Length: 90
Image (tube, rainbow, N blue to C red):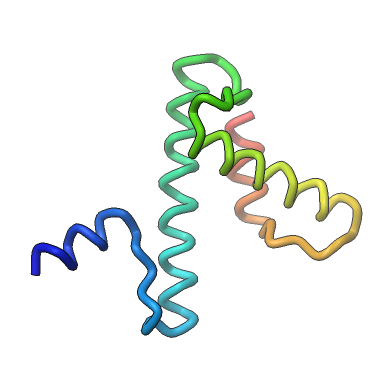
């Protein structure tokens, strides 16, 4: 239905999804934000996203926080591949 398509467009995570479906949805959103960060960096020449760009600012702040936890040897959700992708942007 049209409603389901609209929910899927905004990466809505259904409660009935199994764990792998939720991971897929999270990865999809992560890749969207990575693309937004790439575009921001291309246009602005840096990755210091202003807080006015609320969604991207929150996302990059979370990535930096997870990276710092990883560097301190704490549990982190920052996977090696994601760290590599972020480092390639700058």
